[in-house]
Image (cartoon, rainbow, N blue to C red; front, top):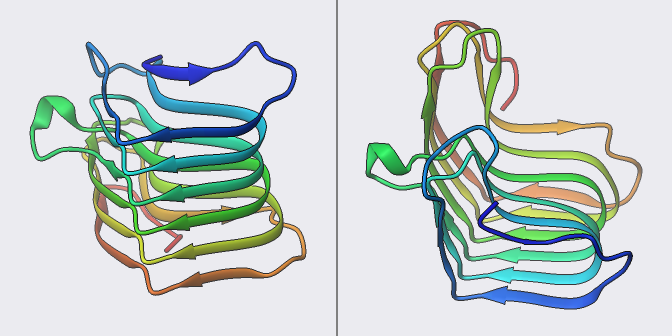
Length: 171
C-alpha cells in the first residue's frame, strides 16, 4: 500500500491533504489511501494513480473531497476510484475518477461504490469517466448496495464511458 493508517484500534481527526500518491507498480494489492473505522477523516485534494484502488474507507464522518484518481497515462490507470464500505455520515464531493481500464475476466471493474452506508450520505459533483473492462467481466460506474435508512443524496454527478463485453446493470 502507498499510504495507509492501520493497526490502530481507534483514531479521530485524520487529514490527508495535497498529496501525490503513486504505487511503484499497478497490481491487485495496492491502495492509495486506506482508512479503516476512523472518525472524522478528511481526504482532500490528493492525486492518486497507478494503484488498484484509489481510496477505500470505513468509519464515520468521512469527508472525501476534490481528489483526482486515475491518469491519462496507461501505466498509471486505477481499477476502482473510491470505495466506501461500512461507514456513516459520508460526504463524497468534487472528485474526479478517470480511466479505470483493465482486462478483468469474470470480474467487475467499478468506478465508485457505496456499500453498507448508514446515516447521512452526500455523493455530489463527482465525475466518473471511462470505466472499461476489456475482458469478459462487467463494468459499473457507480454501485450502491445495502445502504440503511438515512438521507442519501446522489446528485449532480457525471458518469460516462462505461463499457464491457459483458453486461453492466448499474449506473
